Picture 1 (tube, helix red, strand yellow):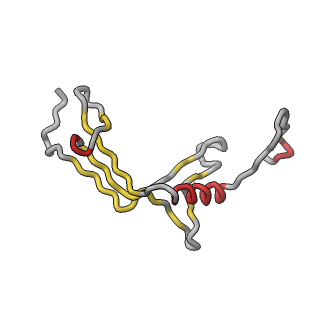
Picture 2: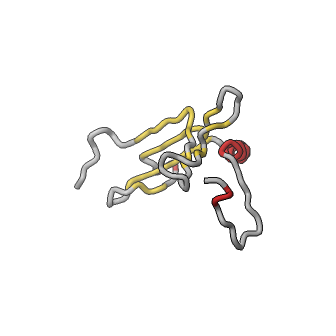
Picture 3: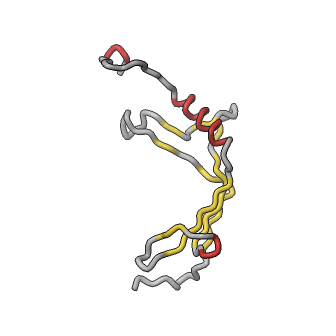
Length: 113
């Protein structure tokens, strides 16, 4: 659908962005953050995962926030606009490198009771 097919009313400004620009700006933003991530969880009496401290964690995820670069070193695929799901759907894809999932729960020790 082109702009000629849209009737705009009561707007001060219309801004158009590209998927590439969103990916580049998101990469700039992410580069300012700490990229090492650690998530700590335990399980409550109802079997729900609950955030906790490193000392009390029975499930630990660690990794480095990362994203895919194309052959020219530009970030790609973090945000996809106009997906197969529909034109109003935005798909986010942030990955982790050097990721590790650990559990202190021994295999076979979890019950449903």
